[in-house]
Length: 322
Image (tube, rainbow, N blue to C red; front, side, top):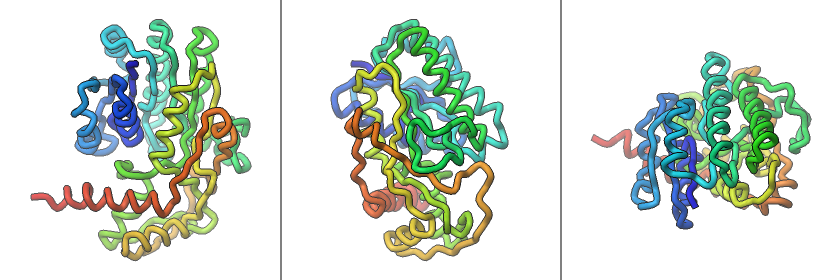
């Protein structure tokens, strides 16, 4: 089978690409290598994938209709995992037009072409941010009509549009809502990377509410990839699934775990929680367990240990390379 992975050079996308290649699939990666963070990191993310004969890389933008048409005409993907997006609630408040263009317009562009080519299945990556401040734990039936940021609003819009295309054109679609994904290759703007950068450099960490009363449902990358693969392999016509660890951790406890694993002390600089951030993310994963067999198994300590090893081997070594 041939799989098209948009955003396939990013954090989650590159791990998904490798997982599919390891099981013998043909994979087409579409990525525009934008400068949201260093494109060099994305190129390093695909080093392993490029060694597989079944791997094809297309450098370009999901908003480019002619390019997407050409990919489908040449490679004829059977399945699509749409991970390409502008990420981050807080940055989206500074440039909502860009987030709408990529996350909504790019999704419509991709779905339009996928519908004409009759793909066998499509997985749309969404986010726990769509839940806003709804009461937790969040199930797929929880309210998502009051998002706190343009990012969350555009991802919710993409979910709704994906249902419309499923209804109109019969595209089998599974929406997966990611909960605070972390692990090796994590983006430099993500919390574990930001915190470890500061700790290693001896800089203070901006910790919202001092880490008290702020919880995140940390979900390790390998567990997320297992859920995405299960969604790709599913024959469910259309549904939405939470992919989370179902075990929120208070930020002050997260810091303590990082200190124990890295051996560095954290200097805390408390700040108020931004309006774009909910105080807690907490996944109810019963549906994903029941219908996808999703069962995350990585403890926070284990996952952060893997992240710390990667950080030392890749990030610190590259910084100190001549």
